[in-house]
Image (cartoon, rainbow, N blue to C red; front, top):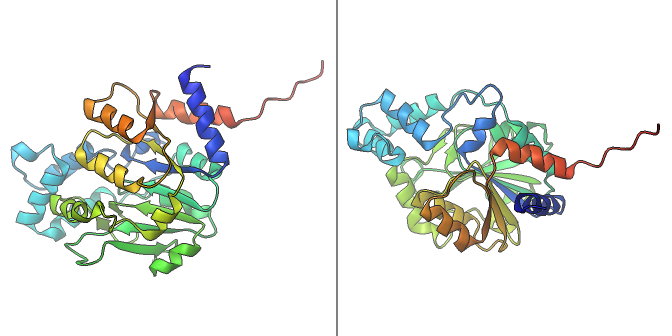
Amino acid sequence: MDQADALLKEISTYLDEGGVVPYLGPGVLDLVPGGSPVPNSPEALVQRMVAKSSVPFKIRGNMTAAAQYIENFKHRKTLVGIMSEAFAPDVTPSDLHHYLLRRAREPMLIVDAWYDNATANALQSRVLWGQVQGVSQSEHFGTWLHYYRQNGDQADPMEAETWPVVLYKPFGAISPAKNFLVSDTDFVEVLTEIDIQTPIPDIVKQLRTDRHFLFLGCRFRTQLERTFARQIMKRSSDLHWAVLPGELTRNEARFLQEQNIKQLDIPLDAFQSLLSGVQAPEPLAVAG
């Protein structure tokens, strides 16, 4: 058995035990049937931004800096309008979204670190679920989080204790209320408090305890990506996995080692197919 097979069996076992927290990044949208109708990476999103608003050349490839420039010189409403237009299309969940929801056990925590509604759409068949979203201090000063029922109504934080499935969107999301953490200021506000866990929902702190994170469609090239992942998985278990095809950067390799995250160097679509095969029972023999 090679290393990938061993890790797939390990992940499958913990999925059956209810011990896995899927942590989805924008790369999961690469698996959307027919292609993603919304930006599926920070690079794709900043291209959308600069196509809608002029930004200095030196920051045209930096999502948070470009967003900050638009916010400073064109107003926050302009930035929110660009984000709302970019993520307005309804996103069909991929087979991977549906597979993870079928395999997971309640109470279930799903972390989705992008702005689309694919995971929320995949959850619509669930009887009861809710989501927690990060919100911008520029628009909701003094408030870090908003809680929403599956119908989009805002909920009390205590209600989240009753949800069998909790979808955590740390960067906000297009629906139901167009909450977006995207500019430098948005993230600086959160990062000043995240080390003491203030912006992390209490229900997330509860549900992550002793669980193993499975990173899908994520990269850890930037300090922002690594910091959010590190703080969200804090005080969980000491064993995690990441599907990261290709060569790692030095910072990614250091981060995986630091957090005891095992790398699966396989494409995301192959991972889902292989994991399904691990779970599937052996076919019955047909008598001749």
